Amino acid sequence: MKKWFGLVLISMLLWGCGKQPEGEIVAQVNDEVLSLEQLKSPFSEQEWQLKSSSEKKELVENWIDLTAMALVADEQEITQTTEIDFRLENAAKTIKSNALLAQEIANITVTENDLFDYYQLHQNRYKSSYKEYNIQRVYTKDLETTEQALAAMRNGMNFEDSAKNYSKESAGANGGYLGFKRKEEIEPQVWQRLTELRKWRYDRVDTDNGYYIVRYIDSRDVEIDKNFKEVKNEIRKLVLEEKQRDLYNRFVEKIRQQTETIKISI
Image (cartoon, rainbow, N blue to C red; front, side, top):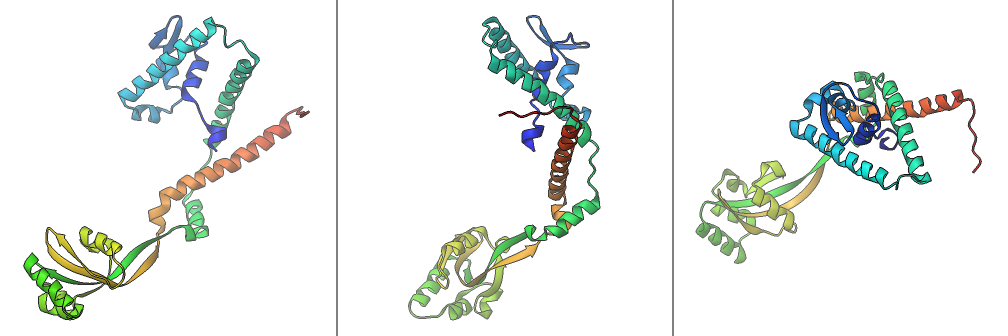
């Protein structure tokens, strides 16, 4: 779509500067002048109001640079070639065509039914997934106790008994089993270490809140459907683009049929 509806704003401004502008003059290069009306012309009033003063100044600076270079190119007569003439002619046609298409596209509407129909038709696209680990851990508030728990496990104590004997959180009484947890439910350092461990292997993790000996005994990927409200804005953009493509194809075909003569000899 960008291919057929890409507006080159500065080119539009340059093209319109052949006529003597009316209103407030915002820039001048030799005899070439740029009016505020011309500067604003590629934008809707709302788009223009949203632009910062620095963005507006940048548009003016770009126009000055392009105008100055174009004048030098004319002085050196490097634009007087078939290639440049063809490209200038095509630029004019592009601007006119885009203006015509913009007029047609302005009439496109996207309804709530359009959005919901698209959502239902492509619902498989709107799924998200996250990982969960079935975690077992020993939590202590001091490094000494943590090292004692690690030493006990190295000497044959199983993880469950170590949690019961050394852990300082309620899960310890249950052997340190936390069940399946996702990233948002676990300390960042603990989660990072879990992603680096192999199943059943354990390691010590130091955090600002204390010390952990952690491992996971299982993992799973959980997939959930995104609801319509979550993806509504994303769908609106896709539906609008789809309608614009359809309109473009139908509109161009209509124009071709109305054109008196079209010949291709290549």
